[in-house]
Image (cartoon, rainbow, N blue to C red; front, side, top):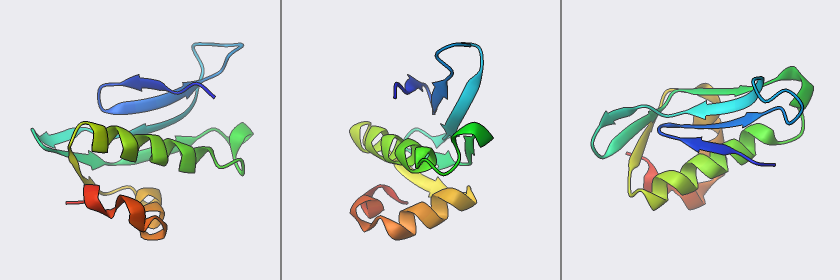
Length: 92
């Protein structure tokens, strides 16, 4: 699974139809040190395969690498971080 890392976004596209986005997590900046994880999407064709969790792990690791903190407004992100105490250090 090859996630595409972009500024404030990590996405997954269909290999056969590269223009079709299958999953994403977005985290726009709120200031120079903070982002807001505000959206997680997974296409119906991938539901139940743990893709949202993999996206969230990738986002958390990327934010840690960038030494940024996160505020959560996405309901999936809130639940995910509750279940993953190893990433509490990136929460603001």
